Length: 336
Ligand SMILES: Nc1ncnc2c1ncn2[C@@H]1O[C@H](COP(=O)(O)OP(=O)(O)O)[C@@H](O)[C@H]1O
Ligand SMILES: [Mg+2]
Image 1 (cartoon, rainbow, N blue to C red):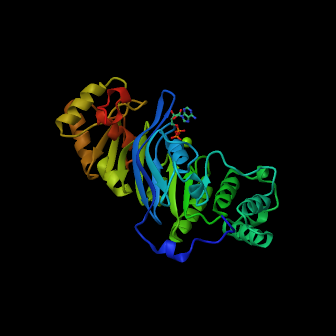
Image 2: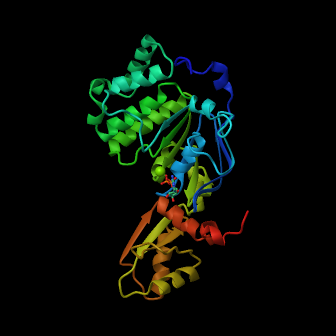
Image 3: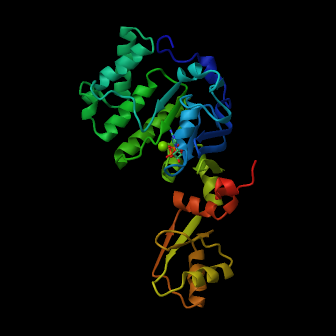
């Protein structure tokens, strides 16, 4: 990249253009299949949230898409460039911030941004202007001259994100941008991401939190053991797992199998397997809570604890886990 100019306006005008695409992408590390035939597609100016627990393959997919990791099979493209054949083109068009941030702790916030701007080819004046612009945008002015290693987690994450934006990338990858942040820093970061998207930036973010995906994402792909096990909008995903759930915890004396049996007889689809032995029942309307209580009452079981909730990531996983073909170990899956 020469200088820090924004992409020409006509390149932003095309809506619906796919900016991030993975087709049947697999990545194998030795005996670990970290990604298994992953397909995603992210139109320009939208946010895809890649939702998954630790070890799901999120960072690996970000690595493949940013041309940092070679893929084992399949095809991936960012901004129309192929990750395997045109990695340089991709690197100069993306911003990447991740769990292993590239900010130098010995340098001040401002010097970090200046350094990156100069590395991207900007002249001294342009680099200074861009650094100051970002410091203001990210409310880092007050700490600009302090060494980055003295920053709090929230400040550090903001500087990291600012650093990834120096070159005005069209596409940014945020790997768990808010993990470990306090609630106000999280909110702050969400607002920054929303502003970027409003300006036409395309974002792929990874997260372990459904509420984050819910708030920021136009579409969500749920990644589990290297596979996309569900995808759609937040609303579609919630509808899939049951708009709402009732969670029942039993007394030690009561037999969970009998409770499950009773709920099934009442045409419910209880989900078990939680560490604490609780039973989750997807329900349509809140009045169905009464039906849960009645079904248990019929077999003489009274819930020790009963709670009502909107679906969480755990519910999504547990409900999807009821479809064993999707989550079976690779060796047991029908081969593609
Ligand atoms: N460099 C590597 N060498 C071997 N295994 C790896 C490597 N990177 C990731 N893995 C494995 O790939 C799987 C996915 O990891 P990762 O992409 O880091 O998941 P996530 O970011 O969702 O926590 C895990 O089983 C992890 O141990
Ligand atoms: Mg990760």
